[in-house]
Image 1 (cartoon, helix red, strand yellow):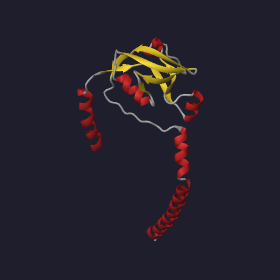
Image 2 (cartoon, rainbow, N blue to C red):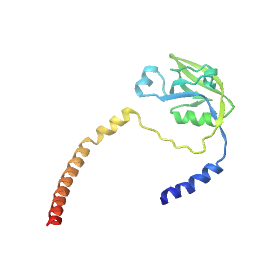
Image 3 (cartoon, rainbow, N blue to C red):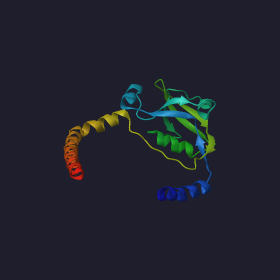
Image 4 (cartoon, helix red, strand yellow):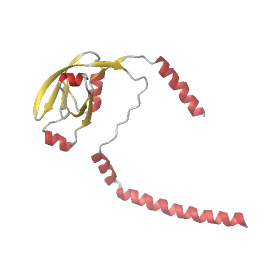
Length: 170
């Protein structure tokens, strides 16, 4: 209960007194490029557009699903966080977007929209599937040994518990 009260004491003032500042809005859903995609698309960096929101600044600028955003105002886009930061910092401003579409580079100009900045934002990035597989394969033997050790400890605890039950029932 104390933790909930402490959380409320911290969160409520943040929500009430948070500055309501507008952030830029482009209107795309993106995906990180895997190494295979980088090779297949013959690009060095960028993010893949998975979806363009209808009537968004991105749609008005001519961006399409499947385009790869390479740069915004001359800054290389290597991950979504870079794109998000650049766009968020420029509400209602025009930006130049370098894209790769079907192997050709095009420059598009978009007038960003503006929307209210979330007062409270929790963000979490998950590793891609290849990273998870890599992490899982690195410590497989160590995990097996630890699991065996835990099984042995569990058996010892079971025996101790049985002994305690016998003593209690006497």
